[in-house]
Image 1 (cartoon, rainbow, N blue to C red):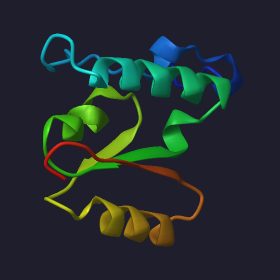
Image 2 (image 1 turned 180 degrees about the vertical axis):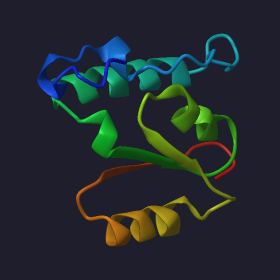
Image 3 (image 1 turned 180 degrees about the horizontal axis):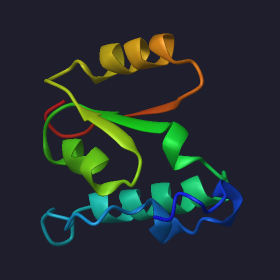
Length: 102
């Protein structure tokens, strides 16, 4: 991602990290991440002010696959960590990802 690009000009792929997606073939997480990346572009989300917080399980890989800030927490703690992030910096757009195992 080019940090000089204004958020209103970013495309869905600009929110994708360089990490290889490692979910099972046919997993619904592929559709979810593409939908979220599309939504980020439509919302003109600033990657420098966006954070994805996850717990455990396959869905927890989500922050690695987004070209934003991210934090991989322990089982069941993603909402608490996300609350702490938002309290520490209210300017951030904080998202929680949960799924299998969380």
